[in-house]
Amino acid sequence: MDIPKRLVPYGNSEYEVCEWAIEDVNKLGLEFDEAYISYLLTNQSPWSSWSLTVLASIDILNRKHIGKGSTLGRVVSIDRNGSIIACFENLFDAVMGTLNSNYTYSFEKVYDCSNLPQKQVYDFFGLKIKVKSFDEWDDIIGNLNKTIRRCKNRYFGKNKIFREMYNEGVSSRMSYDDYVIKGIRWDCFNFGQFLRGLNNVSSESIGRNSDLESKCTQHNIEKCNDYEVRLNNLFERYSIDGTVAFKKMYDLNEVRGRTGIYILCFPQIKGCYVGKTTKCFARRIPQHFTTPNSAFDRKYCPDDVKEIFVLQLYETQFMVDAIESDCIASLGSEICLNAVAGGESIDFIKSERYDSNKYQIDLDLVKWASQDSINIANYLKECRFSQN
Image 1 (cartoon, rainbow, N blue to C red):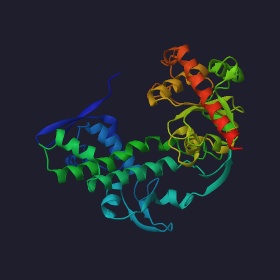
Image 2: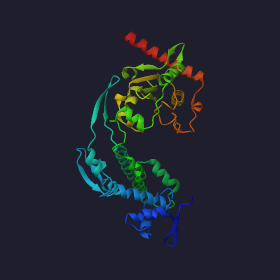
Image 3: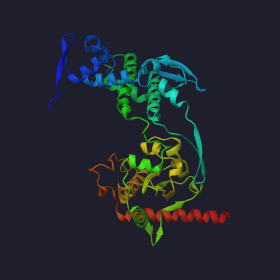
Image 4: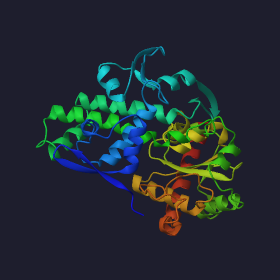
């Protein structure tokens, strides 16, 4: 089905624009004329040319959600005491208006309803960790601050890749100073893309404060009746002569400084999460809750985790990536709470194209890794015994 389009004049040229974009702009009380097109082109990306339809769709989102009287209200800068210092109609004004500050940013209406997030202390497998309560606005505020921080870094020349991109393809078209401002304008304008999901943000959004059963049901995580069987099959796969390489943890301090694969278990919903670290178990695992970056991190709280198993490894990043992918594939997408297949893969394990067989590694390699892990565990056990 062809989407109706209209030719819109601009100078000596004409641009093809989708009818729906023109109608939506008109609903905001604006005319899709030369002045509006000029405004859109001012916010065009310095690296590629987006169609007027796309630019208009982003602008519509910005106007609906950012600014006085909009869904979120104006952008506000906040000092360390939690006081609002200034208000701005858009992100660009916020960036250019407070270039030399270390303020954090929010939106008027979000800040009014949530204030500064509070942290709760959890006893988490031998560690005490402080975790911020997650609410439905965290994604928006997090991306707002990332965008403004990135723009400030570009203004002060702290982003080497940004400069390299200028030298490689933009230097012939504009000065570097113009490029910096255009890059900042585009980043601030393009924040509207993130607001596409704002209509899905409501009181029904699932956050850390929800009960685990609700998280399971409303996020379409399938309950798997053979959860224990799958987990035990994985442990059997990673075993040598009946000795299981995966070790159940009661105190993460025991693997401080150790690296490898870990499994966070949620038996209440018959689900588990497979992760890896080449740094430190005792540091990486709590980060899911103390510095959340993914949907999984923001959805669950420390109390939801009932068991943790670790596979200690000395191996390289490549080997750890391969074993992580193998564990996810062996457990199956039905019980894994991971989004992707592990390692460097971007395959979503809930998608139809995901093939678990593609990610399982040779059994000899599995046994080799298992023996390595068992040897590490025995060595550490002997060290602790000798110290006592």
